[in-house]
Length: 416
Image (cartoon, rainbow, N blue to C red; front, side, top):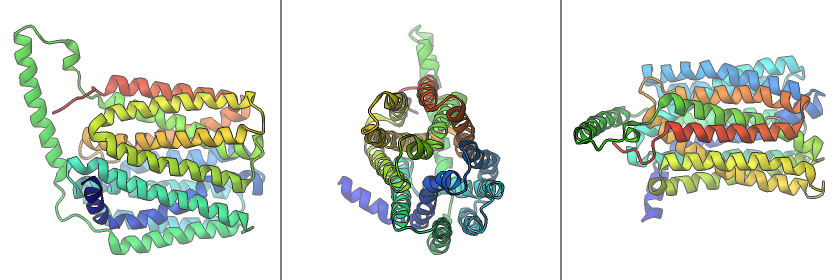
């Protein structure tokens, strides 16, 4: 029955195919760009941090703008196409310059348009499917696009192994974005009616009214505890999202350079390591989708934060281990971190569609973008001036703080 339900839902999501190619392009770039700046252009970790961090910073207000346009115009298809076409053009211009300052500017423009498809994608999933199918909708989307991301890493591994030039890899990324655009022209459609999120809001209002009357009756009999009055807190939930994203940005932005320089891993092998990290993300998505109804999104979100906190801190042991086994330890750690991210992504997106009010569809992506932007700047700076040991311990602490925020901001087993 589970396989049958999953197959029916998957068949209804053919519009995801364009997103597969989009993620394939950026999966390749995720490892290639830091190595390109450091190895081929002679840049530093600071240059990498500026390139990625400024792009993510400008994506934050852009996410609010795209989210506003998404809810205001309800032209989800057109916004997705604009995002993909613009990225194909910008990535083509990447291949035409080797000046780091120009690349930083182009990557800032990429940040504006890269976030453009996220709010309309989230709304399409929420509107195409009932609330009970949201977790599986996000799971299937994330699983398919994660396969695209992994395919991009595999493509980078193959192309670099066969000696393709850096310009060729950039042109491949542009071509993949163009395919994403053309595919989405055909497959992405606007929903006839956008009512599902409105229905969920009504359900929450009715549920809160019922809960209020229930608590009032308990208060009259003197059986009401303070903990029962607590509900989900959007501000604290938002802080948790930002902290989790901050730690992830700090950890992953300089990581390809750490593997290449500190552990003497070749660029080809770095692609391979991140490929397995991406496959672990895929497994995490599937697990989260299957277990969300039984365990609950709130519990899964907390698990993901604790797992990442422990794994980040454990990366510091690499510095006290023999160099011969350090690459293998890094690969294993990244596999488990990928699994934890899969848990986080599905549960946090589902909860955001439930908790974030209508009209603020870009809030989730803005929070993730803000935390990631700060992380992309702070991570390389911390690694450059204090070393990677301090970076890994700091990231573990921040992941733990995100767990504390989710613990305080999300009420366990809260029903409406």
